[in-house]
Image (cartoon, rainbow, N blue to C red; front, side, top):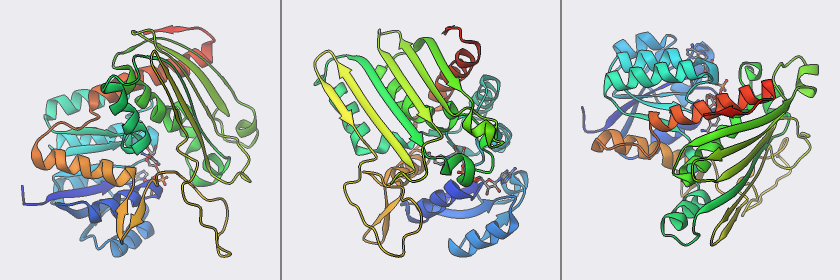
Length: 342
Ligand SMILES: NC(=O)c1ccc[n+]([C@@H]2O[C@H](COP(=O)([O-])OP(=O)(O)OC[C@H]3O[C@@H](n4cnc5c(N)ncnc54)[C@H](O)[C@@H]3O)[C@@H](O)[C@H]2O)c1
């Protein structure tokens, strides 16, 4: 390997661009190649981020480009093929959340990863939010006692399924939103889920021709006795001040934490602003003194460090597979109205 970790990005759309911005600034990182089906977008991103090699086919990129590691930032339902190809080519992989949208796909990715013996990190980057990371540190220090109950809400306005994503009907809220909070819950629980009950309803989006449920509510029980109540909705009015609505309450045997990651600590509005602002207490990817700053940037730097130093990422394929099993149980429980035992 050269002195720097050479990284390629597969999928340079909405979130892929955050990967490009981050890798351009992460220490010891060289962004060498990008891949996307959309030729116009590919050319635009290559020029903007000074990337030397562009590909429309990720197999070609994996065979020809000088990359040690790749980010896979494809739509939720397309993660498996690219991940399997990347592992077959011996690359380290930063796989965007969710790991996959079926247990079968997640198991296939897991097997390919084990066979390759390279690094796999699933990008549940919310672990790098100071509020969630601080709560984990307080739990580990014994300040709060044992987790008893969690209420976690993470929702979007209609903007996301109707305007941001062209492929909303190919995913569901457990995979797009609930997975972020479920990863945090399981991280805090320190043990596995045992039982899931859930409900969902399809009305507003289905009526608009996007066949995916409007909301999910799930109750997940863990081995320790912890109960988590998770809910996500995709049909909040677009007139809300933020595209994201989030609430997280953790009740422990000796303490309580209330995290509201959406309430901005800093509000800026100008006459040139158009549409709703994605305000976050901690920016997904902001800028400080001309350098990227935010939980996505820090998560990606962590991945590069793990490749450079040959250490294990904080979130591996084990976590990805375990979370996928719970997400699919939520989907099944909501569809059948029956509890799912894990
Ligand atoms: N960690 C986070 O906070 C976070 C935030 C947003 C999105 N995501 C995840 O990132 C992934 C991408 O989401 P997005 O919002 O960027 O979607 P997007 O639709 O904006 O971008 C996806 C890109 O993939 C390209 N693409 C599709 N099929 C391809 C193929 N076979 N080969 C090459 N390129 C292909 C598309 O042309 C598009 O540019 C999703 O899995 C999503 O859940 C994660």
